[in-house]
Length: 113
Image 1 (tube, rainbow, N blue to C red):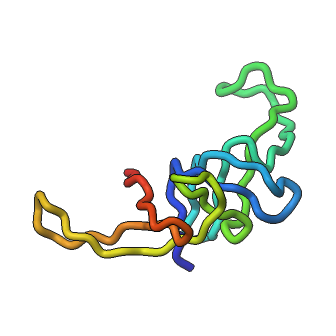
Image 2 (tube, one colour; image 1 turned 120 degrees about the vertical axis):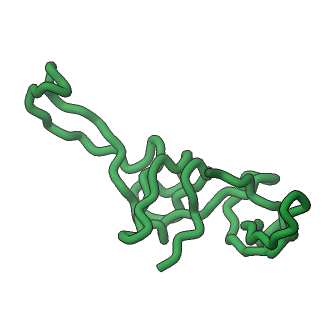
């Protein structure tokens, strides 16, 4: 399964317990088809004191969510949209590039690295 959602994209959850929440994608796991989104699917984790965290205790952290449960937000209208692709010619290098576009407005998504 090819994921069209990249790190730093803004997405909205369309199904599950966190339906309707929006957030920024922090991490993408393309092989598993899962994402970690800021402020979504927060779970409590009981940790023992260790070298990393000397305190220990109950920590709240974001867990992964299936990529099929989210839709990317349109850069123009901030509404959920599907993603398409378009081939454009780069002026500097004269090479063809594939860019992601919004299906609703045709707006190009910002290029992230």
